[in-house]
Image 1: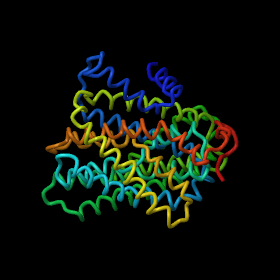
Image 2: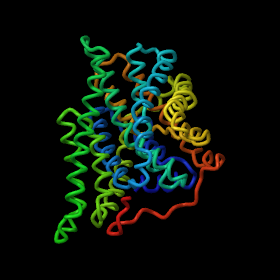
Image 3: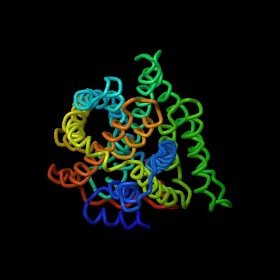
Image 4: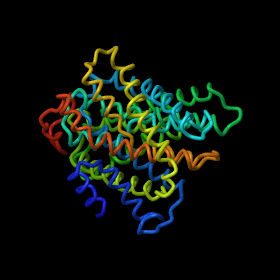
Length: 392
């Protein structure tokens, strides 16, 4: 209930909802009135992984293929090349600003290298911008999370295993993305065959079936050593755009599930942080956030999209729309569970960067789009459960 009230208050004042949910967690936590001492990084990592999977599936389910199809190539490039460029620039900045080894600094860069699906999906559901840009941002946020996860796992391996080298990181990237893509495509083919044939006699169980299908897509890819996040996003995209549309009740069920996932995930991540420990990283955190927002993200966007002849105004909005949110914090919990010397400093720096990004970029994005003349009139909501297909 507190999450619902906080979300309503955040929307009323134009603050991203993730800030409200993180704030709830910190209020309940050890430095807040709640005085709850929670330091279980393993549990936070599990909650974050499950929550992010639910959000990615719903994001794919809600995406319209006619919006995604024209931007598949730029979204894929931003989700791979763009993440690598952002991570590299942020990593070098972290090496200069923080007391970290080069490997640990690059690990921090990998953690903050992707935009956040939860933040992007929530932001652009209520802020109308040009359809092509909205499709690109949503597709990118769904596709770049797996790249950031793979990079993070690779650099953790590099930092903790003496025999690991650069080739180890490349192997992990290829395995995670290759297997995740293969499982996601296979799940998509199954969805396109099965969804139109879902028995009407058990229509009430369609949401349960879709949840089980999502869990299988994620689980099969993960057990096989691939990216479950990539697989589950592609599975959601297939279910939402299958011939005839998703069965009745599926879309609303997963929208509610994604909102619940945001409340729980951000709340638990807020519990994990101690605000008193953030004070020490404020100067370096502000500088790192500035480099990320004003240098790393714009360089990545211009490098990838300028050759594709995107207008300067669209490049400017894409550069400013690189919202950071749950993904970096969830990935930072990966670090907390590993024997890294400066893991607390990495986690606190990442958390502070996310707060700054969400507050500054999330709160001004709609205004910036209006200044650039890229705002549009609100479009009708996507067809609800049981309505005609959104595929196209």
